[in-house]
Amino acid sequence: MTFDNIIEFRRSNRKFEPEAHIPAEVMEKALKHASLAPNSSNMQLWEFHWINSDQIKEQVVKGCLNQSAARTAQEMVVFVTRRDLWRRRVAWHKSLIDQDEKKLGIGVKSIKMRRLYYQKLMPISYINDGLGIFGLYRRLLSFSIGLFRPIYRAAGHAQQRITVHKSCALAAENFMLSMASQDFHTCPMEGFDAKRIKKILKLPRGAEINMIISCGKGTDSGFWGPRRRVPMDEVVIKH
Ligand SMILES: Cc1cc2nc3c(=O)[nH]c(=O)nc-3n(C[C@H](O)[C@H](O)[C@H](O)COP(=O)(O)O)c2cc1C
Image (cartoon, rainbow, N blue to C red):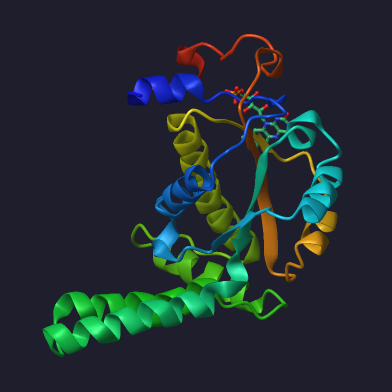
């Protein structure tokens, strides 16, 4: 398929063929493609929960309010944000920086910059004290510096949530386009009971469900009408 074909093919389908099977390799490839999505600071604060057990699937379908895209799905993947894993990701980056430093030698500028970014800047961006004091400090700092020059307006908890959800949604789109390129349909869903899904998947407090994607061979009746979009001149604004 050309890229145009893939974009045309990917449409939300809400009624999948009951007998069609998705080979595990198709799912694995699409999940790999999901992990290659662009993401903020390459922190990869996401998880892709591929539902394999029939028992868990049954519960997840109920958690998705029993909607038909979930009920008829052959496979389901829950896209989860993991803002809470930032320390683990910083440690992962640090180990890569250490390895590169051993190879390239101490004092290499690009390595110094990466160390500064991951070991100083990332903690400043992700640390939270629970009271919002650190967030206020970050906001004041960027406000004061921002009076004199352009600066990234780091803020608190809400900003961090937006950041991880943006990246996770890009992974979800990579996943859906990859499934389309392999001749399978998907349906992204946000119509679910997040609290119940988190409980079913035994997710910690810091995790959040971004979206749940149902997959299968779509049917004609699974497309709800023609694909409609508002005119381009309403959404593309030239400056
Ligand atoms: C974040 C998000 C949440 C969605 N939630 C649901 C949902 O719960 N149930 C559903 O049937 N479709 C859901 N959709 C699918 C949209 O309705 C669909 O993408 C939109 O109508 C455009 O159609 P298309 O995907 O075929 O291009 C969701 C899509 C997105 C991106």
